[in-house]
Length: 294
Image (cartoon, rainbow, N blue to C red; front, top):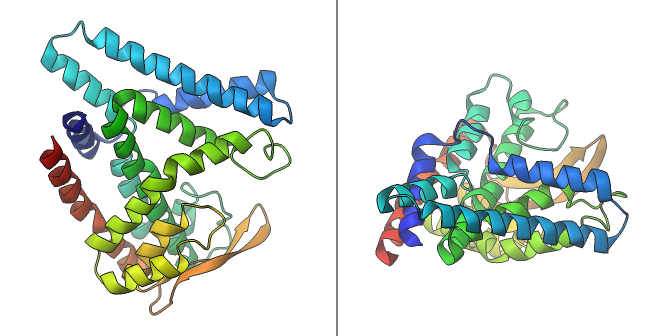
């Protein structure tokens, strides 16, 4: 499993998303089709969707492994590594956040990354949104998929991405999804519980200002409504000595989120670049750990 994880991470680092329809898009098609035909304002109906997609995803990944056994051994390993790499998003995440730092209109660029309203954002708020996206998605898009890949192989990373996709599409506390999306949201919380905290610890270890990063992680990591997202965000805020969180507008409504960190300095392009420097440190750390375990 560790050799497969190394190869998958290296493929994602070199090539990013492959020039074909992403597996997550097929999962999204499944969710959309199920919801269109079978939706009810019911926890049971939502649970049926969750179980259906998880079983379908596991079955397809199992069949892919079985079919790959007909390939020569080296080609089999490469094929499975390419499949596994589609569950990782370091390359895409890094590029997307870096684009915000480089953009002349960061409010427009960050609108492709976040669900919050961006029309009336200041540059500082746009950079803050990018920083929060970087920290939170290091867990969802990198550490968590690797965690389940090393534990359970290709089916592990595939099922995790199915859970994460369901949460992103229906894990909302709205009139439509309060019941229908509840199981998906709770399952995603459980799946990310360990990876989110592991990501936060890695940020503390690999970034500067470790003492302050740990202090803010311990003080503020639990403050968001999400049981997981606040931990890597708080660790990053403490490391860079900035404040993340705060007032955010969604669909024209203001939501007052807790502040994570202390505003010792403003958030700017420089701050984002300092946060993005975590990538090469994380690359080295992940390769060394996986190599030592393989």
